[in-house]
Length: 245
Image 1 (cartoon, rainbow, N blue to C red):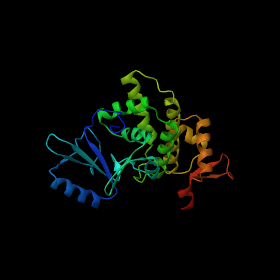
Image 2 (cartoon, rainbow, N blue to C red; image 1 turned 30 degrees about the horizontal axis):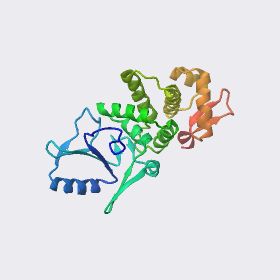
Image 3 (tube, rainbow, N blue to C red; image 1 turned 120 degrees about the vertical axis):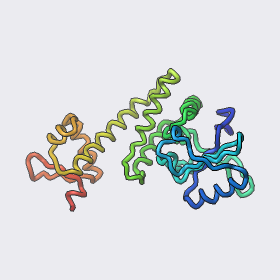
Image 4 (cartoon, rainbow, N blue to C red; image 1 turned 60 degrees about the vertical axis):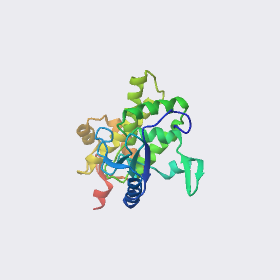
């Protein structure tokens, strides 16, 4: 953002490396250059155990991440492909992330300044379709096993932006619908993981209208995530893993 003239200064430089071995090697080099290793302040990045903060007195600070930012989003191939070459410094090629990807990466942190940066990026112009598509891909590729819905993190930040800067984001409601759909899908799958159920039973257990349950089941059947026993009345739905075990 600073190199594009979208902010006058930056508190730190964020680096993402692909392995802990690379992080250790880079930390060793930076330490020899006078940087001091600290732990990341808890209020800046929750549940962050692999991040290091390397500070050089009152000078520059480097935030070093391993694979993911705040143990959530990763620097994906899509993000890499959208980056643009800024300069070549010897063996180092400096590429700038697209505004959309910086916007998304900042949505999963707890740093106050990141909300201000998101507002600046929004004003500079971002393609919401790129942001939403990357959210979807990162949710599908999430290897944490927690079934994270990254659109939910983004929605929370958009709501904060609206309150803080007194603006209205026209695509927030579309994002809200995506989050609601994904949450309903997650609830249905979690319930089916405990055993088969009918539409009526799912509706009662989850407190969802039958029409919404049917809509979720339709998509889950298309994605081959469930099995519907239509030989029984009413139909009994099971999670595919349980039905095949």
